Length: 260
Image 1 (cartoon, rainbow, N blue to C red):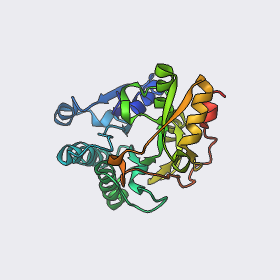
Image 2 (spheres, one colour; image 1 turned 90 degrees about the vertical axis):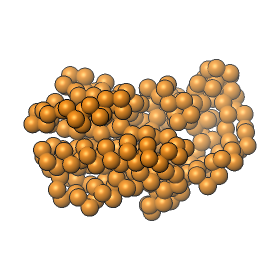
Image 3 (cartoon, rainbow, N blue to C red; image 1 turned 120 degrees about the horizontal axis):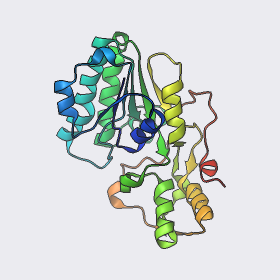
């Protein structure tokens, strides 16, 4: 039996697809409290995959973020410790802000991930196995529900299909992100043999928004329209992300994903 939180989310759905032959206990925000109160079959659980969170980088409801992203994660981790269950959880590259390797969160969501990672580091020796994964900019199948939080690969594709054009912020050649395909994320999380730790999960090969836009426009025969950078994102927007090279793995490129 595997416990999977966030199974209805973008990355969670991709875990569910791969684990379709396993018995899965799905935990979502709407049933999390009932799960905490009523679940008793811990002795049958062989793995916890914790993907559930409020992931909006613009959310400012601190109480909601702490309850969902921090308190529930800590509770789940304590069950993993108590029952000696391996646990793999989603952290985020947003903890780095505009740096490559220094903790510097730029929004409340990122702060909740920092709090969780610090708690895990303080308690790591108590776990049978715990792995945290600082996901970088994940894209792939199943992003339809994410709307403004979707990857640029998805948003640009939808914009071109809807209007024939995609919108890029001015200066997008200077905004570089480490884009990682969700298929690679799921594969690495499920099939690595590393010890307990918190790991970057990205390609270590950043690509500019400009390049992604050009690739999507080429794929779907669209045009690019440039728009001013929004004032409300000033100081809260990561201009560069790059994962530490922690995986001997052949990552999918955006160009390969688009089959160009």
